Length: 435
Figure 1 (cartoon, one colour):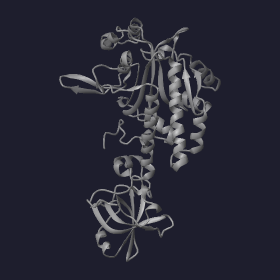
Figure 2 (cartoon, rainbow, N blue to C red):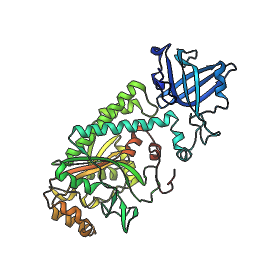
Figure 3 (tube, rainbow, N blue to C red):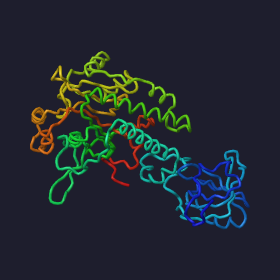
Figure 4 (cartoon, rainbow, N blue to C red):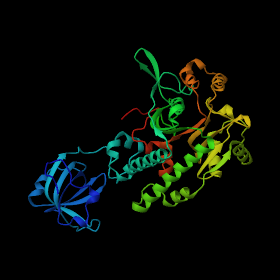
């Protein structure tokens, strides 16, 4: 029953069904379509959950004067058996309140009958999300984030929040946004790396899901200036252990999406692909193996060189789906990565790839203060800029490992998106600062 106070709904659209026949309800949403057949008008009212057909007759038709598509309305009425093949039930109106009229013409068709370019859609993103196919991406993203949080918390990880305004370059990189911070220069964090390492000193296992910032002048389908990273750090685990956690996390995400497909289907998810990935063990290939495979395939790579974009694309054609690249040369990795115990020229590190796309970078961290300080120097950095970090390593730092996962890139994989901007509400890149 409606409470009659004007602005509240009694039900969402997906709750309107035959079990409510004869009951009076009040729904709220936007007008997706208007079909006027004279003495009878059918309205299709959509909300975030679905769509309902409304029948308006008699004196109530006066309330529809100048009504435009995508205006916000609140409708009260009795549920009756539907007369259209697409609707088992409909609502026969006894009250229509137009709350907010939509100005015509709209900048795009949120019903999706007319396609719009991605840039135009992002320009009007709030309206774009009225297209259920588009909003589905972000419902899936919310679901994925919840699964990830649940898996990590079940493994004794504590969720933390680290600073996004920092005083020094967290990883020594040059691709930082500088900001005026009162009377000094500060930077937007590109990673929680140093903070999460410090926190395991006492909290043992931590994770964070948060936005980070990278001032790279790359304008590609997979790079953004602001991105969401899922980061973990754990004491007394090695790189294989945290790879296992990443694999467990992905398996849980894929299994949950499989259940979503079983219940209601999906516009973006490929059921067969999701089920296949959820059953597959993620293979682990050494950097050396990958170089050998690429050279055998005609891609000239010197051992010790980083893998170029073209090399990774070729590798992704050879190794389908998810796969790890392990044991990278130490010189290719940041100063905080630990060397392999049996080979100081290699690192105890890994990347998780999906085809050519890097999703995770991680490994065991250097916990010895003197070695960490020397690694900073070896990479041409000034230890003075890391004194706060190094000081924590004097208080008894346990061995530890971790990784960072790009949530937006993972969503590209899960939704078959060809551009990361498809899966980000308000993307920021070299050419976009609005809306």
